[in-house]
Image (cartoon, rainbow, N blue to C red):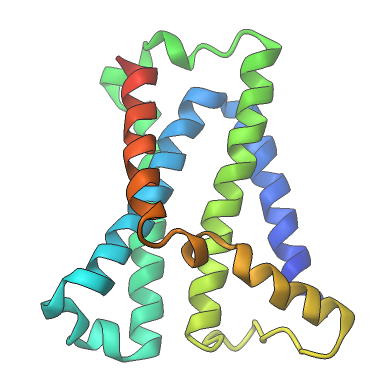
Length: 179
């Protein structure tokens, strides 16, 4: 059996490679999508009384799937947006230099951390509802390392006021990059 922490870091590395291929400008849109997804979930969970009382927020399994669908849906559109006709010819999507690829590598790693870190955090909060994934075992070296990593995952530290600043910074970055 393989540790969830090992899978997590492998996925971060894979997404870093994807980011290096796609370039930094494309990856900025995905970063914005990740932060926007966490921001929307934070607002719904903390300020939308009508949502908190519904089944999507009271049932842990339904809440897990709601969080997953919101995040994955926004990430999907973040990955697809460079294919929009208005953006296809944009100069920022030309990856001609090594700096573009290195910045894409960094942004891809950040995106992998945001995407899979958030999904792992949601899964942990729901009590690992998928039968093929089990919770890390406390008391073992690899299990304790995985449990210690949970506090560094994005939904844990992207709370008020950090989520507000992150959302504003991500929006400003997108505006600066594409305008």
